[in-house]
Amino acid sequence: MTELKTGGAQGYLRIATEEAFAPREMMPLYQEILDSPDPDPGFLSLWGFYKGSPSPRATEILHRLQDLGEERIAEMDARGIDRQVIGLTAPGTQILSTDKAIALAVMANDQLGEACAKYPDRFTGMAACAPQDPATAAKEIERGVTKLGMKAVVINSHTHGEYLSDQKFWPILEAAEALDVPIYLHPQTLPRETAQPFIKAGLDGAVFGFGVETGFHALQLITSGAFDRFPKLQVILGHMGEALPFWMYRLDFMHGAGIRSNRYDFMKPLKKDKVSNYLKENFYFTNSGVAWEPAIKFTQEQIGVDRVLYAMDYPYQCPPEEVTALDAMDMDPATKKKFFQTNAERVFKL
Image (tube, rainbow, N blue to C red):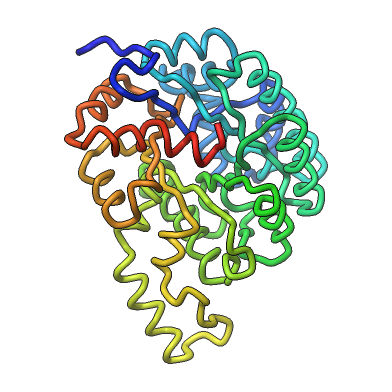
């Protein structure tokens, strides 16, 4: 395998846009939930594994998550990654009680902001918040962007089973639009009422459940009219759009059929008519966890080359072989540079 290097000798920098971290102070909060009499089953399946398994995968990921220094940079160098765009790992604040969530968001943003200031050419931060208190969340987003230099907002999907499509959360959307920063809608485990069948099948995590849950969240944002209320809002989806680009034809057909037949009283026509129009105009898509040339090219073709970005999904899925495979894609140099570098520079204002 060719040695991977930073610096852009291949014609582009590699900017990885969905990379995770976890403050050390978060771990006791998570352990407290795991030790409680009735922990959320999805959380137990995910974090019970990472905090309890002696497997190399679990122990290495847990260690890597908590580093925002030279060790992380060495890992980036070994994979040829010039910059990471970093957010608080799932479920972040959103599994906690309101007071603890607010405190964790502030702590996480302070730590990430400090690391980004120390390594400004290597790290870029996404602001965390506590959606449990939308007004306070909006203020923390503003602090993260205006005081700490954050370039996006990370929302780890649902908050205790509730979604951003609920208008009580719209102060968060309003803040992101007003500050002109995107929301990275990152997966987390399925809500309590839907998790068990997935857990029983071993399909609750990144293998399938994450995509189902987060794709559902994104679709609810569209059908709720959130983007008609906040037309400039931009949302980023990882994992090749949680498969939504591949469903666009059927989404458009069946959503349109439901609207025309007045099947649901609460579902109203959208200003942009089709679901796909919002996917093409209000969303960006990263390939995190999908180092697969056909899927990347399909999304570029259907959504547009300016809306598809590179991501590694560090430390959860970060084999160097994936970088080598993507470097080797049969893609014209200008499009490949957009994918790896310039789209991220534009979206995150780097």
